[in-house]
Amino acid sequence: MLDFVNTNNVRFAVNSVVLVVFSLLISLLSACSKPAKEESLKGSSSIPSDSSQSADRALPKMRLSIDLWPGYYPAVIADQKGWFKEEGLDLVLNMPGNTDKMLARFSAGTIDAIAVAFGDAILVSSQMSDLSVILVTDESAGGDAVLAMDSQVMNNLKGKRIGTNLGGFGELLIRKLLQHHNMSAQDVNLVNVDASKVPHLLSSGKLDLGHTWNPYVGLAKEQGAQVVFSSADTPGLIPDIIAISGEFRRTHPEAVKIFLKVWFKAQQWWLDHFIEGNLLIAESTGQRPENISLDGIRLMSREDNLASFHDSTTEHGLPQVLKSYNDFYIRSGVIRVPAPNDVLVSEFLE
Image (cartoon, rainbow, N blue to C red):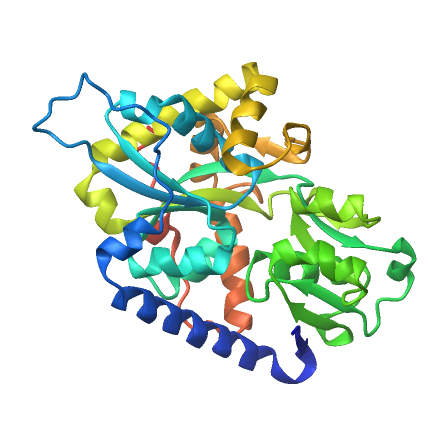
């Protein structure tokens, strides 16, 4: 059942409900036993054991969950090739296919790191103060899209049903679209949906427009949908990041350094061996290799990261992006928003 929201009446109520439900999810996950939680994660079983490691010294373990998004696939490649273990890190990689559950697990402490949109990480920090953003994986430059089955719908958006994950970066993207057409959220019906559901909801006529990302953009296009707005129209708005818990950062600083070293190695290898890399990604994620693309996505190198973390003046710098999201969340009724020094940690990139 779709959650239709008339923003004219209950904009603040929706955010309160989202935060309450989010808190309940965290509490439920925290109540589970630790072994059961770890069994739910997908381990790197395809990687052979590293005989060079002494039997009496266990490798540090890092539990990472990622969305299905091309900017995060260097972790998949490195995992498939066994590079993390070669460098002395036992990476446990999980792709749950549900962003909200992944965020709840991270807040509950059942995983150590997440790869998500920066806006989602900021929202999580309102519930979890001990969070560190250590890497910008990419910038969405068209990879996030708003689609419609009929582009003529853009001629009159009044009262239209527009789907996205409310309270996060997707809603901010939708609001930018509405501003572009001199409209506000009060002029439409915002619908709270997961990105993976958007192709079906568009094709079935339950949505007029919907925000999603690849591979779901490709699926929606296969069903006849057309892109009517995208992150290419909002430069710098949607960076994607890796965030880790403060506890893991303090306890395993060397593991974080290893992770970043291997990440950039895998990122460059993929760019140099794109077809071969896509085969590895497809094998791990269950996608078709031809559907894996970097169109609309700008991967961020180590140098790009250093520039972004320390750029406090332009719209592409993380401090300014953080301010944009903080302003949005404060208007939406979220009381606690992070300061840059609370969440942006560049020391491992130096």
